[in-house]
Image 1 (tube, rainbow, N blue to C red):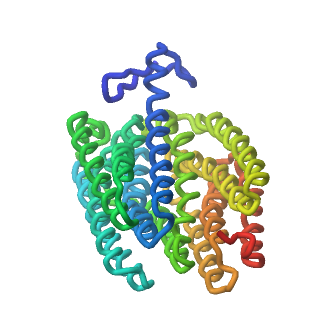
Image 2 (tube, helix red, strand yellow):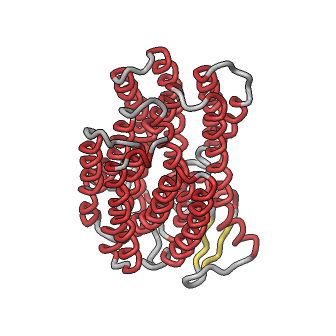
Image 3 (cartoon, one colour):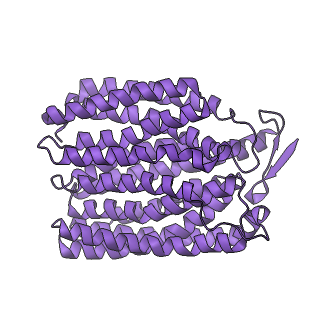
Length: 436
C-alpha cells in the first residue's frame, strides 16, 4: 500500500489498482481538484459571457482574448509541453533545471505579447486599444506564469489542486470589475485586467505561504547535471501550441469580433477538458505510476458523458437557434476528441520514449497550412477556424492512440476527424451556413 501526501496534510491511501480509504480521503483527494476546476472554469465562462454582454464583441475584446492567449503560449510550450513531461518521464532534474524554467517563462510571456501587439497594429487595430490592453496583459502574463510554474511542480508530484485553481482568483476579481458602471468596452477591459492582476498576485502569495517548490519537486532533484531541454518534447510542444496561436492569428483577418467569437468554443473545450480529465489524471499518471491502462476507464466515462450532453445541446440548438447548429456540432465533436487527446497524450508522455512522440509534430503544421490556404479563398469563415482547432486534437488523438495500442480510441478519433474534414470543406463551399 502506498500513501501519497498532498498539501494541507490530506493523505490518500492507494491499494491495488483502485483506491480504497476513508471517505474523507476519497472526497478530499479525488473531488477537491475537480471542484476547484469546476469553479475556476465556470467563473471563466461567466466572465467571458459578462464581458460580451456589457458592450458586445469589440476591438477591445479581440485584443484582450488574443493577448491573453499569447501570454499563455510560453507557459503551454515550455512548462506544459516540456517541463512537465520531463518531470514525469523519469528524467533526472537538477536545481538549475527547475530554477531556469521558473525564471525564463514569465519573461518570454511578456515578450510574446509584445510581438502580438505589433501584429495587431499591422492588422489595423486602434493604437490606444492595443497599447493599453497589451501592457496590462503583459503584467498579467508575468504573474500567471509564476502561478502556472508552481502549480505544475505540484501537479507532477500527483497533486492537481493548485493547477486546477490557477485562474480562479483572477476570474473572481474580473467579475467584480465587470460589475462596475463603466461607459465603454475599453474602460471595462482595462478595469477587468487590473482586477485580474490583483487576483493572480494574491494567489502567488498564497502559493508561497502554502508550499515551497523545493519541497514539492525535491524528490526529483539530482546531483547530476540534467538536460536543460528535451528537444523531442520541445518540437512537439512548439508546433502544437504554436499552431493554435497561428490559427488564432489567421482568424484576426476575418471581420471584427470574429476572433472573439471563435474564442468562445476554445474556452468551452478547455474548461470541459480541465474539469473532466486534467484534474483527475495526475492521480493516475505521474512520475511513479506504472499502469498504462489506468486512465482508460476515466476516459470512457468522460466520452460517454460529454457525448450525451453534446447530443442534447445539438438537439436543443436545432429547435431553438437552428442557424448555429453546425457550430454546436463542430464543438461537440471537438469536445470528444479533445478529451481523448488529453488522456492519450499524458500517458504517451509517461510511458513512451520522447522521440516516439515526434510523429505528432506534422499534425498541427499540416492543419495550419490548410487553414492558411483556406484563408486565401472567399469562403474563409469562423467555421473553418473552429474546424482547424478541433482537427488538430482529432488527428493527434488518433496518432497517439495507435502508438499506445488503444483500439476504440483510435477508431473513434479517426471517424470524428473525417467528419471534421467534411465540415471544413462544407464551410468553404457554403460559408453562409457558418455566418455569425
